[in-house]
Image (tube, rainbow, N blue to C red; front, side):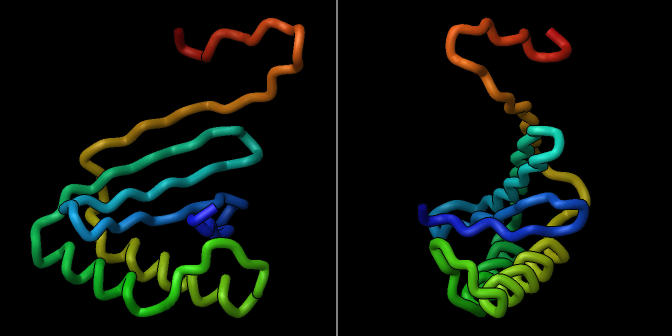
Amino acid sequence: GRTQYVRGAGGLWSRTLVPNQEATVTRISFNPATGQSTTRRYLLPLEAMEAVRRQRAAGETPSCTGDAAILEALSRREAAIATLLPAEPNEEIVSECGVVVAGEAAEAPKGL
């Protein structure tokens, strides 16, 4: 795939998307221990978007690698971008993923 996730604190895998055509930043994280996926969107003013884009452009984004040095650089860049974002997102979507075995009924999502 095109998107490289990096492993962070607590085993959480995350990736930040910074499109050139939109004034949004999207941080996607996945916790394999709980199966929870969280998407947070931040709507930023022009100056803040430009700062995030400069940080994103500071290094290459690999599509998929196991190279420890590249992953460490990407992890540092992800952390630097996170410091430029507001404390609270404008939108947050939380999904729970699970395994369904063929022939078995899936459980209803929690809270429904």
